[in-house]
Length: 146
Image 1: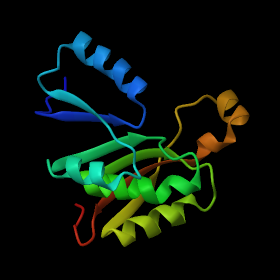
Image 2 (image 1 turned 180 degrees about the horizontal axis):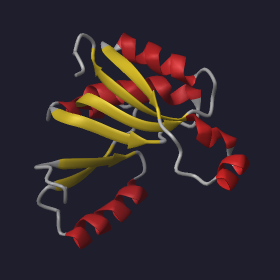
Image 3 (image 1 turned 90 degrees about the vertical axis):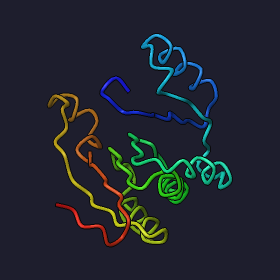
């Protein structure tokens, strides 16, 4: 919101996390442009209700630690916004294929872009999964990227 967005919606599945977010919103004095909502990805009614506001972009980081939640995550992102942007560390080898399959099922194409980790060599040695950092762009199928 401080970078110029006219409206921002923050979501989380845990109300206590949103309480912290609300304090940050108040401290940043952006309550006129930022709202919060509980969103559990598996809750289709809430996903659809939020999506009726026609958000342009859904952004998330490291949201899926387990492959079992991939379909719900993609369904939620597709329902609430036209474009989805995830920065994600793949912890499960089959997760990229699951993300692509879930996105295809809801009419989205997925572009997976590897990015270099900002971690130090020592941190990467201690946490080898950090080598698997990727940016995922979810767009409606048929949308051309320039």
